[in-house]
Image (tube, rainbow, N blue to C red; front, side):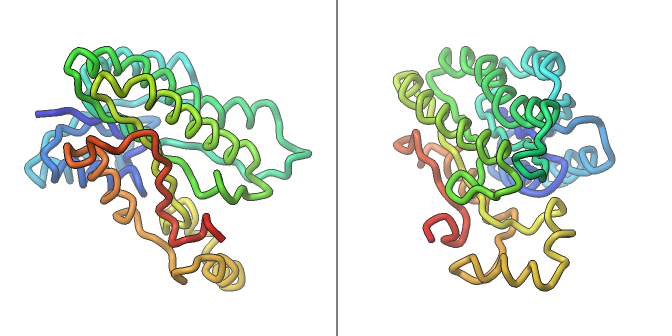
Length: 242
């Protein structure tokens, strides 16, 4: 049984991915900042599906905690690097703390976890690395400069690593969601005027659901996707191409 780590899998997109990979037959390591009720619930739901789950915790804004997590995932076949942090702030008012935390969580932690997991993948001549980006790589929000920049940096890393790891049977891809209805944005979208502006900006005319992202990740983890690497795949209802 292959093992998949899904960071940030207590809720939203990460949880949907974790449940989908469990259905696909992988052992899933679920991850959160701390051992919360939501994280435990995700693990229990996986087990209820007949799958195998393990819980690991780490605050990916803290590089020492990220390093400790990296030591525990050296026999992973699949990495899904979903955890991210975003602060809304105008560019003039961004603090060094906001900058450091977002870069550590959204980019540096991805690098450290990939460094830890790839020796095992190389040994087996098989591996899947999927980072979760954002439509903001194409359409940056004016009040999320560091978030969108960190996601673009992550995708640049994906393209570089895809070329370097292809000979080892490891594919590396980025999935970039658009507006996905999760608890992260439910408050903002509860404002009817703002919700209309957002919906009007999406060509298909509606928000996505976490399962819309989980299906693509499932494909990319499979042998059917062995010929797909170095790609940035937008799951955004067409928003990124307007």
